[in-house]
Image (cartoon, rainbow, N blue to C red; front, side):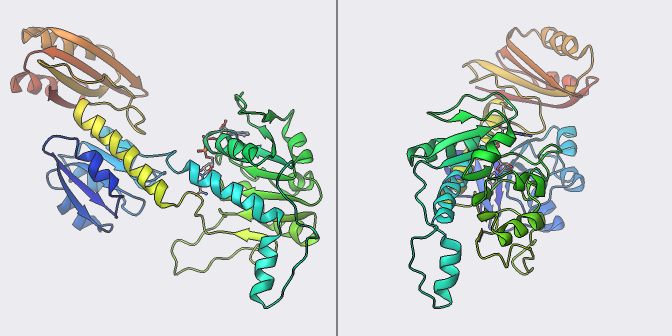
Length: 401
Ligand code: NAI
């Protein structure tokens, strides 16, 4: 089986993919243009990319051997997921591998803001020696208000409690509190009581601009706001005026409504001239540890799919994992249209071939069905051809123990 890894995917991915018997791994350190990519995909079963490689329908059309794509990053916008599913190509990513990195940066930013580091750093670089304790505070015993108690919010909760903070949180789902953290009665209560409010929600119609002028106005005077989640959660113009008026004592912002597409574009924001703003260029999750974790996570998902057809956590396939294949068995994996009759065709063809079904699992999502069937003994090329031609089949493959 041939695997192609582009864009300097972390080296840990090679070790993980090496678990596939006989795998040949080719690496190219950058993204390829469409024609180069089509040529490079010849014979490739597993493709690993990061965010710069665009996988369009046209590219997929030119890659008949491709079984799965691993996005060694968080997002999957760069891949036409529907077109991939239509061709039976499973797509995976590593959505939570960088959450610890974000939680750590948020905790560090809390300390930095409460010590007035953004303005002290700016002053010392101008040659000013602002050695004063006025307005500087320990984080111990202060209230941290976490909005969104998911992977990042809940990890931050544990880190902040360890630093002696009183953690309150707001989530739109019921969540088990870690340690002594407490759910706030409402978002408004959280805004009103917190010394530091930090956002860890996704961007949705409900959360977009959730921190507008009115919500910022509900925060305590002298409090701090952190957004290390998504750029469109905060009205940055309203935040800049709250910082300039002194209503908020500082803010740490890593994500912006408009971000430069590359290092050659200038960063524009009303926050640029706010001295109490600690600004970072969307690097909350960008650490070498996170890259290694992404290499492991996305790599392992590709290995499971290649070796046993496991599609758990795929972003475009029905999820299913039938586990390890027992010795002496063959697994038939069929991606098919989710319509009545497919399973009976499949089982009839298998029984007509004189094979006994030892295990059988199905999952469906929308218009797709994915079925994994273990039979005793070997499967002939004729049976696979019959199944390939059966009404509803999108893709068939078999794996032997
Ligand atoms: P998650 O999905 O684990 O947690 C999000 C939480 O927000 C969930 O508990 C959910 O129930 C809650 N939530 C959703 N809508 C809500 C609403 N309207 N009100 C209150 N709670 C709501 O996500 P995770 O992994 O913790 O990520 C959080 C954010 O951090 C995401 O926006 C993600 O894109 C961002 N992120 C930013 C990075 C960076 O580089 N700065 C890196 C990684 C993630």
